[in-house]
Image (cartoon, rainbow, N blue to C red):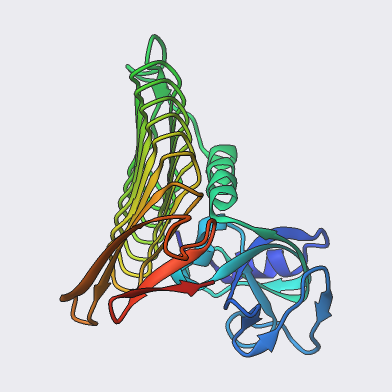
Length: 303
């Protein structure tokens, strides 16, 4: 969906602030500029996307395309105009004259915000899945949304920046487009984000979350849940008891709470497997709620 000059001009005239999301390096820098939480920043001159101004994304998962989860931190930001976008871009990145970094946001919260972002903008359609057990509504266009609220329901969003949610037990949610978000909140649910920059969350007991695209993020917060990030620069989190987190892609990272299992793979730039490691959080100096990456066959702490 292209951005026209007319759209950019209309945005530049908007007086209301925009709530957006921004990625940073672990030291809270972006392109060499140092940010601090709670501070407001201003820039002078004409605002031109990718040239002059502070940049952040309206779509929460848009940040993953600029700052991959394995090497970045994220925050909610508030931008004030004038604004500008890059003409012809499908990115939701916005340039502004003013920005405030309001709060740190973790990956599970980023996924939840992405689901809300898409569902708030989705055009609902009727069809054979519009009612009954396992009910759902499916839209496969860009930023489509699908929901399955009954037990054993299935929801699929195959468009770019789509969102899928399955809230019943043993439900399945899949977002296959770039920047998609999938969440399964019922017991034994499965959430899969297969496109690049996708995010998957499984919050129920023995749930499974898989992010297979590059820069993907997977989180399993229920008891016995499993989170897998198999793409490059992916991040996996097991925040529930007795969970497991696996990062098998290039420069991937994983973390978990005490008692969770971590599985890490070290790869060369060509994808060759160099080393593999498995451990339990709370043993052998592996800290809880801390991301680890495998380097030279050993787990190292990363932001």
